[in-house]
Image (cartoon, rainbow, N blue to C red):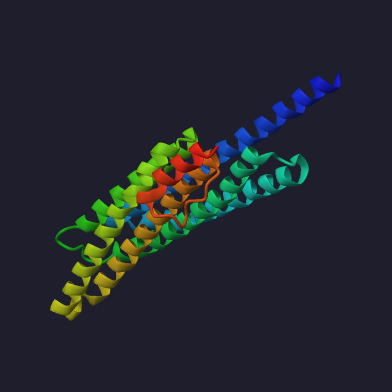
Length: 242
């Protein structure tokens, strides 16, 4: 094999390795999405078995993180990736950490849902949690879609949606405090709801982080400490500056 052919072969194998890792990240994301949907459903429908299954399956999320992290470490050690590929690997390592933490939050929701399933359900059947859960599920799905397509514009739109999650979370927290003040018998259930919506709010934050990694991968700009309102302006200046 001539030298140029060898270089092309190595380059092709490297690209295949990167695509394989990216596929594993998306598979991990899909599994976490499923865990989130199950956890919320377990609470709303009072399904203790479903809640317990979320808790029991969390080890799979952890195993996926370890496998992908080891593969990224192998590539960093053996391939000496160039700037854009290095950004991709760094972003993947960060993204799987966020996905693993999402899995931990799903586990918390599943655990509480399994316990609440044996108690009398409130008249509204956790309607407020169901609504917030759907919003967070949508953000997680769209963040992973932006990651799959390496679409920074979509990533920025999704990141901005996190504000709606924060607002709903704060409204439910205030409502829960009111319930506790009105009747001390509501304290235990209200605290459980507060823990659940806190977990959902954190999942939204992790999805927002993944959106920020997409922008980092494409533009090479870390926007974690930049207000979302200013991101477009910063990226435009970066493009104009070459």
